[in-house]
Length: 249
Image (tube, rainbow, N blue to C red; front, side, top):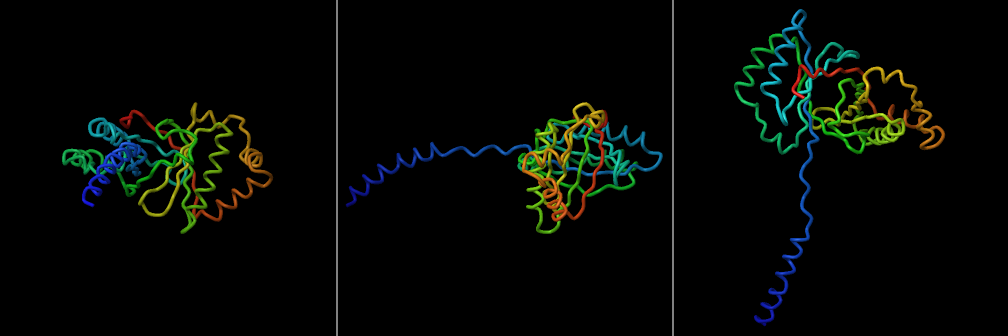
């Protein structure tokens, strides 16, 4: 009996080895996470703020922690500046810490005195299934729609944005969607990335309604709007212009 058991174990071990070899390797995590916050600049401090934030970004924010700095030029937050860090992986973020005492001292000494207030940090993940272009195919001038979902309605809003992806692809528009991650209410930001700046707005595009109805039949656009109305707590839009001279990418 012992001999039979040994023989069976001897046969099984090579098979286990083959199974381990054929097991697909786990895919490496993707750089899909960003952190972002906004600051309001004190009256009369704009030139000093711009000089300080540009110097800080160039010195301390490279690689995974590179900054894109944008001026919000319309909407409820018009006049504020948006700072985006990343994208990175959660694994990389796990080792970020505070980038060191010297980094924090520079921010507190050179940037903070010029800011009136700042929003809390928000984290978001890139939603490839809802986007028509890659996360890092940046544009300096974008239109952003912010959708905040009603409790329990995030799935319905996600379905609506998936249909909007089909519409935007048909209209040949470059769009990306970011979903809030562990940062308060469930929210999506849909960014339309211009190809040639604000002049893109003068283009004669097929209407969303026409394209939606062509894709999914009569009244498809009306159903889409109804789903958005049912799923959204609030919606806002804005124009943002990113200033490469203020950031580090």
